[in-house]
Length: 277
Image (cartoon, rainbow, N blue to C red; front, side, top):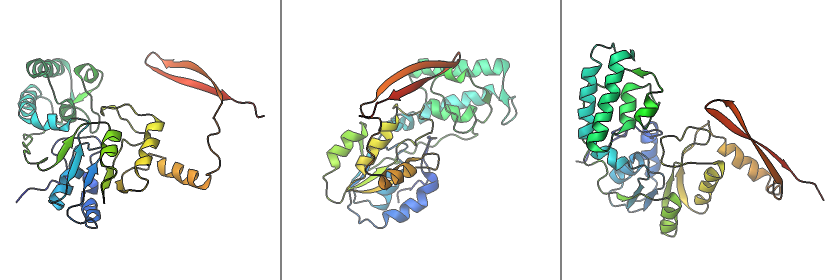
């Protein structure tokens, strides 16, 4: 009997473990044999659960963030964590890692990066930083306070986690175009949330990108995820009530000014103007 995971085997920003049981209930309305396309696959949890629940379905997992690489690297990640445990053995649990121990932590991570050409920085970050504070390089980690949060047990290999999935790694628009005309298609739409940090994703998103995602929803069955940090539902509700407004900034002239708050923080001020005819 195949094991069904209700949380991703490795840490991932925005994985849907809190929704897992409710997601299973939603899947019940679709027959086995339905084609499901996970446009923003992330940790693969939604795809994994779907294939477990609907074994005769085609489930397309868009692994744009290369979660597969992290799963394949579990043995070396475990070896690295084992060395880090030894380095911080004198540091109390959840206390800062400072001084010589801190220097040794960074040296150890660099050693593995040079040896294998790869380090699962998200998993390592979760072991030496507070929850959800993930960094993708030693240089970025050096700007932060480290804490002894290293788990006491190894991560499991989870070799069957992605079994049976159709795995791609492409821009979600290309995946959508490929499957949009499939009869009975269901899209899972879990983009990075508006107004949240997307620093650990392999993408750079603007407001227009978040709005572009909404075009996927028209005319298709979908399961869409967002949060109250995002105003996307409020925005859509407003647009629905004000259909005749159009774009008030169309044909405006735009003037921009780059401003600096401090040595590492800046923003762009904008002025838009248009004279009514």
